[in-house]
Amino acid sequence: MFRKQISNEYDLVEPRAPAMLESLRAFGYNIQTAIADLIDNSISAGAKNVWLTFQWDGSESYISIRDDGKGMTEAELINAMRPGSRSPLEQREPNDLGRFGLGLKTASLSQCRRLTVCTKAVNQSPVTRRWDLDYVNQTGEWRLLRSAASGSEKRLASLDQLESGTVVLWEGMDRVVGETKTDNPKDRDRFLEMIEYVEKHLGMVFHRFLERKNKLKIWINKRLIEPWDPFLTKEKATQFLPEENLYIRGDQVVVQPYVLPHHSKVDQQTYEKAAGPNGWNAQQGFYIYRNERMLVAGDWLGLGLQRDEYCKLARIQVDLPNSMDSDWSIDVKKSRARPPSSLRTDLKRIARLTRSKAGDIYRHRGKVIARQSSESYVFPWLKKVKHSKVFYSINPEHPLVIEALNVPQEHRKVIQALLRLIEETVPVQQIWVDSAENSDLQSQPFEGVPSQEVKEVMMEVYNALIKNGLSSKEARRRLITMEPFQHFEELVASLGE
Ligand SMILES: Nc1ncnc2c1ncn2[C@@H]1O[C@H](COP(=O)(O)OP(=O)(O)OP(=O)(O)O)[C@@H](O)[C@H]1O
Ligand SMILES: [Mg+2]
Image (tube, rainbow, N blue to C red; front, side):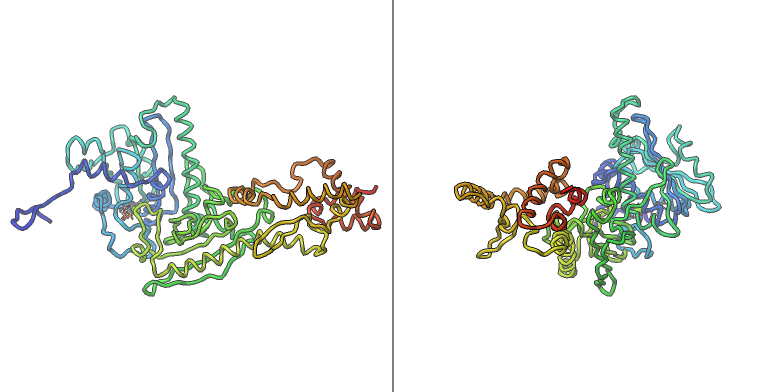
């Protein structure tokens, strides 16, 4: 055993227990990332089930995380409760989700003042240990208590039914519920709302485990958590771009870019769910997985690329082994990863390609409509380039424009002036800004407009075509190829009746 020595060569400077434990609370977790860190431990311990209990009781509320993993012996538990139970430099088993020997303590104490762990290895009796911040503050020593707080034993009893497993219990949750009373409806609702955030976050970061054949099951207050697949891999319209392998010291990083489907290609519910907990725009970019556990949920990783509306369908899966943690600057919370400089060029190239393919989805839709009929009369607006500047003009060959100008000279001048004024002042900048902020909020042509009004406009075009010598049937056939009447087939059919 290590014995304290008196020496002339050095001073022994041990951390002060109360100050150190209080500081361990400030790693920057939120409730979602804290719980995910504990589930990492359950997965590394081979758990098939994780049961989360959120119990509301004002300031006495508690959260417990129970698993049916391999559990720990008493000696293992004592070591597990030690801050820095293992060195980050140690090599880990290939499927271990841990790295720093800190998560259990830092994640738990970020949310609560009393952390109790009860665990049971096969053929062993359950053993319990507890860090109680108030007690450490009082005594000033690293005293790990050997029992649960009085009255809390029953919260750990659920372990008895398992061959092996672990329960982590958070009490005194000052950071979650504070000093609130049980009957405070606002705080109670906030607590219930928090369960939803946690559920979404876990469904996201562990989706690969929840989707597997021999799946992990995570239960939250007895409800099974559903996986959230960021790549819509089961949708036919999702594009899988070619997978690439990149290397660091012979170890492989696998990069699989996806372009997700345009919202017209999937049902509305699927599209809305695919947006993810933070919304379409925020969830574009790289998704980084370490041993299949998601660390980063959509980010361009400081590669100099912005989150843009037109590339929101670009999502790129990156798979890392746990041997690259320091290359990627993985943090204790497992919520950050920075690409090593040796991979930045390749990642940027893959990002650019995926972004461009995602942008094609929107450009492509414009082309499809035009391809149905490449005649000159289809679009009311034309895009023109003059002296390498882009501008938009009203199509002089559009039947309605021809008809409008088919009037005596003095009226024609007014209409020509009006059309010119409209062309010169198209609010391009404003449209660009608005659609970059939220293209889904841009109204489609005649969206929400009563059919009668659409029909009135359509009728004028129809009459112009008839006047041009087309039969009623021919006029209808032409209308159906014209923007935006291709969306109003039934109305077109009803013309001339
Ligand atoms: N649910 C559990 N079942 C079995 N063993 C556990 C469990 N939770 C923690 N342990 C043990 O306790 C140790 C310490 O866990 P802790 O989360 O503090 O660090 P870590 O997982 O090793 O690394 P990291 O800081 O990256 O999470 C683990 O290495 C593991 O041996
Ligand atoms: Mg851990």
